[in-house]
Length: 114
Length: 114
Image 1 (cartoon, rainbow over the protein chains, first blue to last red):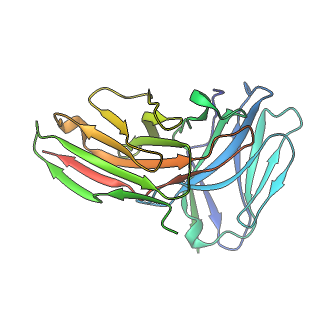
Image 2: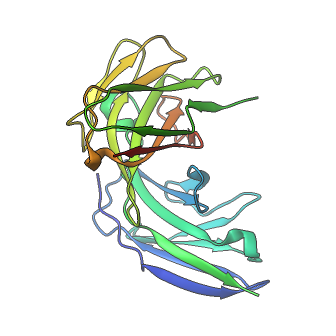
């Protein structure tokens, strides 16, 4: 699986957009970019995923560069409850057999300040 | 809709004792996973089961065994607990397929080995 690189921590003011970067320069054509977050002491929560097009859902937007070597997760109006560790994960498109395991790094601790 | 349920939520063991962590999902998912998370670390995969009847080692399988009892249940067993196994254990499940799909996590089992 491709390796990802994320900053260890970021701060954001409440109500502002939070932009979390992720580098995945070794990503291959059949690999998705996934984002999960983990609020303190809870299980990880799925946020969004994409292959090559930008994606948006009720939680966030995912912007993937044209060369697919990096992506940005955008929380449009961060709240205090968005304070969490955010994980960027790359995994193969074909999720059969052993391809489905998720490999978590240390992620980015996003702190939303009042 | 319960999602992924883990039992127990908390457990204290003495060194050398054995125990089984239980996990059940009600989403008809094929794949299930066990992760551990140590303080300040990301999640590390212990074992996974891509489908009923199959199990495979993850990143840190030593000291653990698993059983995929049926499609719903995936248990993790510590035969002889050691202090190094003090951690938070998360179970997860997901669908299989060629499209990107999300994984759902339980709320964790906090295990202390003294």
